[in-house]
Length: 488
Image (cartoon, rainbow, N blue to C red):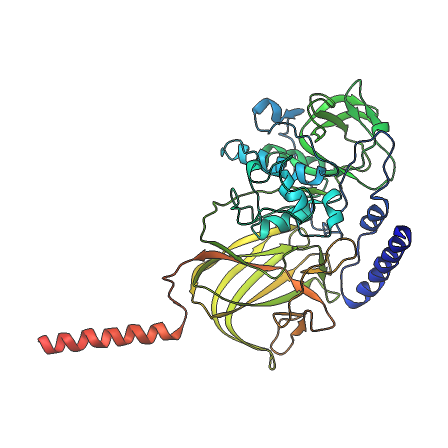
């Protein structure tokens, strides 16, 4: 029965590739499909892994490698005290444990001290299909962070003793230790990865792992085949002179198999490994969390696909109905390609019949990204809104050499089943008046757009952009003026 159901799922996914490609949806990554097919196939004697590729390919046509004349021949975050202790993953949890380890390393680099974050909470409370708990990726981590579900501290959801099944007994009402609102997915360029290790800390990277290719005597690893990735190493340094079965030069990697594996939990992975550095991630910054921190989003599961009009340019428009007084200071969205241009405008009115936007109240001037990923931008000026206000956020994307610029979430067999909103999202190839296509659960385009609003609760918020406040001020001035005349 399981085999029959799985075959039906694979047929569905292959059908999705064809239909989506024709209708403007980004084709699903064939390596992702293959990994889903093989996710339960384990080599005898291997520890259960748990990493899968990203669901779609990203754009790197504008990327060029940087000058590396100043890079040292070796570098090791262990020597600098910028790594957390080696983790011992629960079954299939490498993607989550490595994600938290990467964030913990980043916090050390930023001088914020050593955190012990809950890998367990991410592994089980990601909200994707249950099977993703033991076969996940860094895009799932990004979504978890973006909606402010975490990171939690280990003591808030420990292993063992905490959540034990996907989405079943996740803790409720726990506050994040801090907020992680950005992510980056850099290409596997050697010089870039080396510079990132020096600048931001450890880098998350998928790999194909089998104990067959692990040299336990030298603690080195090399694979030169075509098997899709299934595990995660965190890259924490390099040594140009280390010799492996793949030649000279190796990445220093932190594994999640405990300190008793490899060289106290570390391994030297050949520069020439064929399945390493294809899918990479890091989380560059953090913000303090307070009980007033707020996020408005429709994409609870984040970005893992995109839409396009056979063009590098695309527009998204999302509506949010504000349910409490807020001060809004940031907008978050995703870049699908290296060097993406992003421009953001915020309006308080939109006629979905005529397609006319009016009363602009905020903006983010054009920004150019580096690596693909989630970017959070400060508004040119923060805006104050009161309960009951409608917000319409218009985002223009230009993704060089990449024809699916509009980031979306959608149903994807065996991966995600998000709640798709209705009447709150529109897309366009031009962004012109009248050229907006409604998308959502009540249309033929069952997708959510990935545009997030960040701010803080403030019971004293005044709608500074509303014409009403101008009238109030003018009235107050008139009263003051009349009193001045009377006194005179």
